[in-house]
Image (tube, rainbow over all chains, first blue to last red; front, top):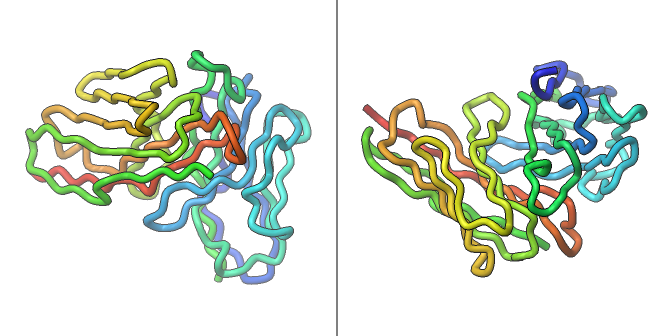
Length: 119
Length: 115
């Protein structure tokens, strides 16, 4: 596609429920990032994929959070037993490669985000 | 651990002014620095990317500089317009330590340009 696409754009769920957030990266981009942004804050890193594998998942806050990218393109962020504190905007970004010094391949492009509200 | 700080947190200026937004980072081991714009309720739009070997990048009325050794970047906006009102975020792509490979963001500067 022309850009990074995230669905749904808005999600309201009840406390304790399970949710899935989807990210379609730019075609051909091998690196994919998930971030979480609370009101008035900068984006907070969650997890980074290079291809199908999670290169770094150190930002996932606890074991209720899990993300997959089985075919190296679309990624799904899964949250179990949601809590009110999970309410935030979840942002996805992709880049052509993870990084390559001196190259514009490292530029990250972001989707519009999914606004998750846990009530 | 990389930390990114943006100053000021908020800025309100009259239309037509030239302005400077500041970004500092604690670990100079970076691949690049990227400036983004975020409109309320929207995602991030990339404005400028400066590789670690570069000193500045320009796009239209925007100019970004990078001094990697001192851990600083500035975003200069010339002849500001009300349409420039948004939150501006800087982010570094880390090249070392426990932050390797991650984009670390500042908290952003909320810019308001009034007519």
